[in-house]
Structures are given as C-alpha cells and as structure tokens.
Image 1 (cartoon, rainbow, N blue to C red):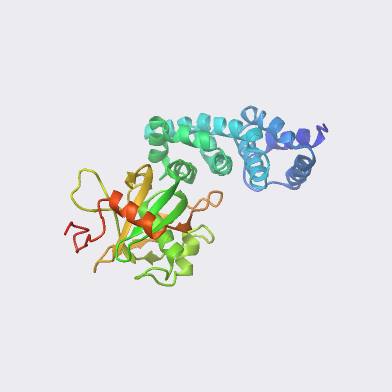
Image 2 (image 1 turned 135 degrees about the vertical axis):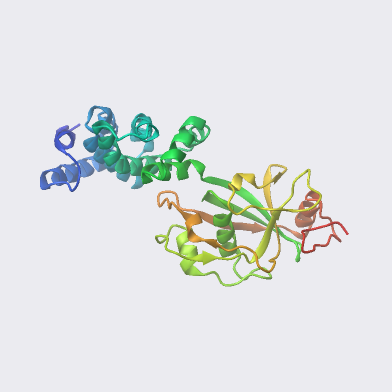
Length: 329
C-alpha cells in the first residue's frame, strides 16, 4: 500500500489549527480521497491515528472518514474509532459546562472541534445499528447529551440519532374499517410521524388531502427546516390494556410510546376534532441528512385481515366512535 497519501494528510492534520484549510491541506485531502477509492483499507489506517492527533486535526480527519462512509465506504473501517473518540471528548466537554466555570483551554479546544467530529459520528452511527442501540440504552450518556444539546449542536445531533426509531406500523381507519401496513424510518416524536403518515396517505382516505410539499420535504430531510406549521387530518389514537376507550397519542412523546398488539404498533384514525393542536416544524429537527425520516405505505389489509385487527383492538364490527374516542355501543 502506498503510504504517501496518508503520511501527507497526517502531517497536515498535526499542524492544522482550525478554520479554513490551506492549499497544502486541501491537496493532501484530495490525494487521500483518491487513494481511499483504490485502497479502501487506508481509511482503517487513518482511523487508528485519530486519538494521536491534536483535536482540530482529529476532527477534520474524522469528518473526512465520515464522507468516505457516506459515499459507500465500509463503516467498520473507521466507525469504532470515530465513536470511541466522540465518547472520549464528550465527558470532558460535559464537565466543563457542568462545573459552571469558564472552560479550560483544553475543553475549549475540544468544543471548537466537536462539531466536525459530531458530523462524522452521525455519518458513522447511521450505519451502525448495534452501536446505536447500545448507546441509546446508556442512561449516563443520554443524560450528558441532553444537558449539552443547548450548548453545542454536536450533542443535539448525536442525541437525535440515538432517539430515532424505525419500525413497522399498522394503521386502522375507523370510519372505513380499512387497515394498512406502513413502515417508518428514523423518527423521534409523534408529530413528525403524523406529518409523514399524512404524506403517505394523501387523499386516499376520507379526510385526507394533497400533502403540502413544503412541509413534507422538510419532514423528510429533503430541504432544510424553516418556520412552518402542520395540522392533523385525523385523530391519532391507540389502545391500552387498562383503558376503557381509545387513548390519544401524544405528538410530543417518543414514537416508542405507541402501543402494540401482537408485537405490532397500532394507530387508529378517526375524523379530526375541531380545535385540534397544530405543530411546528421544530419537531422535525435537528435534521439528520445521513438518516432521513420517512413513512412508507407498504400494503393494504384484506377485508378479513382488517376485521381481525379491529377485533384485536377491541373494536369488532358494529363498534361506533364518538367525540371522546371509540366507545363500545
């Protein structure tokens, strides 16, 4: 393997102090990218050097490795090293803010480079589901990210990655007694899910309409989020074992709170009620362009399948709904 491209890049990273890269650095970076296309293992060798570099150089190299992954490079070559570096920097930055004192020079240096490292962490974590699941279950880590997210976008981005969920979903439309299989990807909260469910159905169901492309493109991370509002076309409810009637799904809550029947998350749609709450596009942020959100309509249940699922939800044929939910007749 030709070491020249990596050697030159590492030398540039050691002297890089932040800000715009100079011509020498840019030339070294382009040579490294070209080498990575023909010698993919060079990314793994570069990743092993991350912890030995000063923070500005480590961050910019990590960011380059993230670019390689986004373009199809194997995440296992650099992902573990990038995530290890992120986990090493995060508590040092957190201690600086938790102490409510002026950041030390070292902490300030890490914070200044943290955004580039975080971009790389997002690029890598998007292709590392096992690591995402483990990190999401780490309460101490999630608490640090939550406490830092207002101080640095790098914490907010990674927290969003770890809170995002993808799952199969069954949607039952009460008035028409129809059922549908959907799949949602990379969504955190109910309001974001509602917007994309509406986009998936459009005018297919009573109460639907042509989606607002301006809103939907922001929800799908096609365009950068701007100020805007969306509104419910239907009432979003689910079932709970200890509740005598359908329960409203909280738009602000995690999509994980949606109840399941036989392991499948269930949403029941009924006509929207007057004065139902709107939601703004802040529920689509922070946007993760490496992990775009979406909802796909995968299929329609047969009449028999839909009837069986309505029965499982405690709403057999003849069930009626009212303004308070679906009450048994």
